[in-house]
Image 1 (cartoon, rainbow, N blue to C red):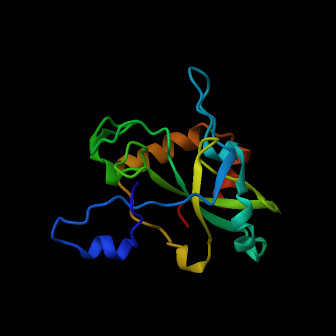
Image 2 (spheres, rainbow, N blue to C red):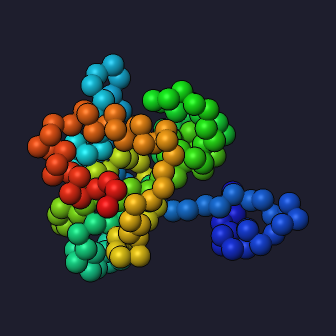
Length: 185
């Protein structure tokens, strides 16, 4: 049986002892998300309506969430495959450290998505832009607020190329609408 540790307790032990795993309990699950398509057209997170179901014992914690237009969803990429500390960028082929990407094969396959909250019907949240797979465990939900806004963040050249390639795959009407909501401010 793994021992659940408080994250500060684990991090404060620099001696190399006490390297027990941290154990988190999911608060919900992605019921509808980004499909893992094989051989077909790959859909982007911006084309998918997601549904998150919060487990009954945590539903009370959602009180007031409907007051926000956007939320942060922290989830586990439970089908990410074996971890790798380096990956090849899918557009440039450049070798990058995993922490310089948002790619799945991470030592701790935890992901964060900023999503638009479309509908709240407890215990379900209907959202746009969720890039989690159906069945992914949800660890936490937080409101997206003014503290989370960064205007014109600096990004790598690899990401800038990926962003431009992604924009060419979306119709100009949809892109104009989407860029009003996301992207460099």
